Length: 128
Image (cartoon, rainbow, N blue to C red; front, side, top):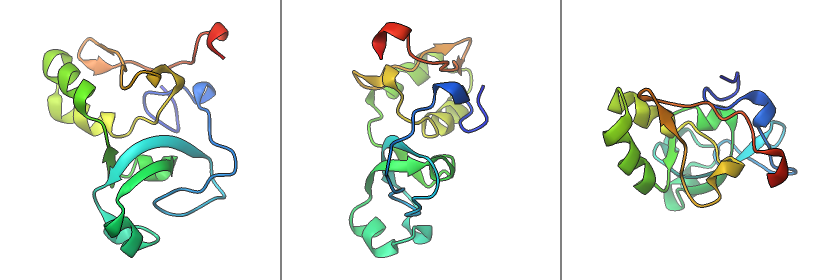
């Protein structure tokens, strides 16, 4: 369990170089790949842009964890959560707070064990 993201070990995080968060527009914090849609544009740094173009690709941890953005692609999680989640509502809240990690090369494939999302601890050494 990480301190930045609940289900991602801090050592496994890979931030994007020279990027700016598409929600708060900060560039002085680590920014991560995250393909989502803004569901609450009212507190975005640029409310007009967030309302007109709600899709985002790069976010800081604070914005990913805020609940104001949701994952764009829900298909795979829609297959996993009903079958394996202990608490469906909590699993959906948590899936929206998972950044993209190298494991997601072919879409969302985050494993669930014993009814909860497992922790991502890093990519195998030969995948880098």
